[in-house]
Image 1 (tube, rainbow, N blue to C red):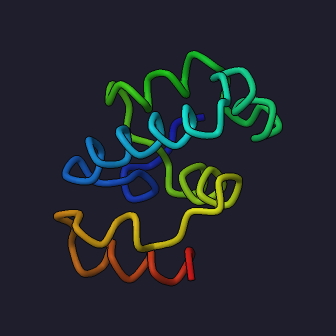
Image 2 (image 1 turned 180 degrees about the horizontal axis):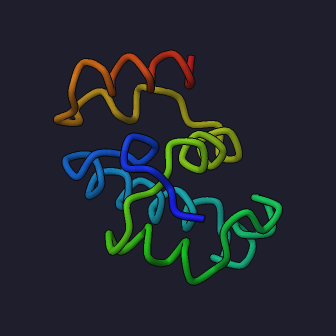
Length: 95
């Protein structure tokens, strides 16, 4: 089943999220397999790698779940060039 475009982060946010995901995962010494396991295999290692490299836009629900796993709040996105709508969604989900 394909994810609808409105359920994916924007192209503007993708490089920032990719960087945050990789840096945070490495900071906590998680492998891609460890993260897949923490996500209850909602996404596999290969898909997570594509999110980190920017080859795929990550769905919001997976982004918010990863933020929960690593205890990230909306402050990590404060400098991101995103729309007001996207900013409100992130603030709502990560506060």
